[in-house]
Length: 447
Image (cartoon, rainbow, N blue to C red; front, side, top):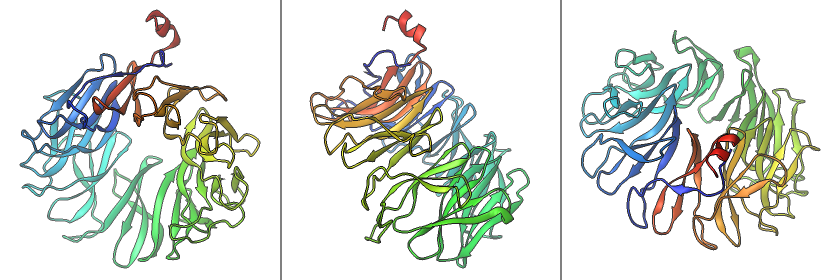
């Protein structure tokens, strides 16, 4: 549990108001990795231990002010994989366990300064899948166990130097789902990473938009299809081409924030389109749920009566409940939760009474606690936390004084702390930490 409500800065990596601008906090085996810039070495990879919290640079992968620009940080078991450019090999795949000597280039797939530019890093059953262009085969699907010998081509979708656009790599029941775009068609593939065998689950003409692959536990895969009309249909696949089918059409904007809970998926649908296309004329954008059947695809609750809708966002699951931000037209945009029923959809707490609301964002669950960023008129946008109970949302002490905002984001748990990124005017944007221990340990620590 959180030990008190006071977070502390864990290091002023780049002195001054600008800060080190940390990106992509990722927890791996009691450590938190992130990319940051100290003003001297360029943007490099840093790490914090979950107990003593002091940040240190993992390795100066590209010495000098340019930096290696680590990106796509992805945890696989006890290792962190990332893409970086050391100035010699171009952007290639690296891995680390946090030690200087164990931060190494995985494989130089495309020798020379251009690099293979790995993308779409996705963990499946202890291995990492990604797309890369080795300069010979074009951009294809690869897999690695973290060694050069164990880095192999999984499947060549286009023999020779040609390429498809491979997108939305997604772990699904021990295999990999992905979307491939070519000149004539758009295809949803399911790939067995060990054999390279691939099944086609959906194929549409080239003008089709396919997106939002969302697996649900050990159950179906949901996804959206726009057949070229500017609106989307919800589809589901149960693991065979014959069990892949359309569930429902949604007018207006695409359904968004597909979020699994059990074997169902929750999402927002019915909102007005980006260019003013009408959505649901009666209910507007509201929260929906689908269990993978047409009859089981339904609106959860009409939170805001009328065509404007409550526009739910930030969908996050904790202890069998779905938490989200919504505007009911009375309390403004505030924190809600649902158990999937209309009766069980409730306002958690009105953090900033009035029509504007606190606009919760950056919702993240850690060990039975929900952390979020919320805005109030007297304290600005700061960090809050809750055990999920109604009327039990608490604020951390202000990091930015008065009505200024620290804009917390990227909450992640490692060891005995919850880490996040926030802005304080004398330090700029830097990492912070809140002690987080079992209740008995909090008491022993005297917090």
